[in-house]
Length: 148
Image 1 (tube, rainbow, N blue to C red):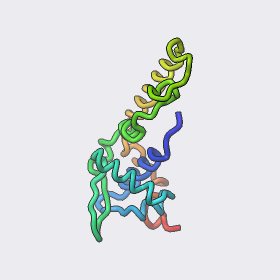
Image 2 (tube, one colour):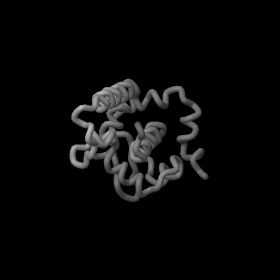
Image 3 (cartoon, rainbow, N blue to C red):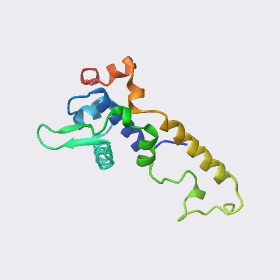
C-alpha cells in the first residue's frame, strides 16, 4: 500500500500542531519546517479543518491549532478520511475496472482484508503517542529548529 502525498502532509501538519500547543501556528512555518509546498498545505489544512481535526483562525494574527487533544486523534482515522475511497487496486474501482478476472479472483478479498488490518493497526496509534517522549522529533518540530 502506498500512502498519498496528501496523507503524508496531513500527518506532518498534525504533528507540528501537536508539538506546538498553546499557540497558533502558521502555514508558512509548517511549510518551512516540514518541507511542504504552501499550496499543498493549504488544501490539507482546509480538509483537516472540515474534518474537525484543526481549528483555524484567519487574519493578521491567524493560524491554526489542534481542534481536539492529540491523545484523541487516531492515526487510522486520519488516514481513512484523508485517503478517502481511493481504490487499492484496479479491481476496487467500479467505474474504470477493466480486469477480466474480477469475478473469479480471490486477490481482491485478500487485499481488502490486508487494508482493514493496516487501518486497524493504525487505529491503535494516537497523535500523542507519536510525540510522547520523542525528544528528537519534538526538537525538529520547533520553529527555531525549522529555520533553513
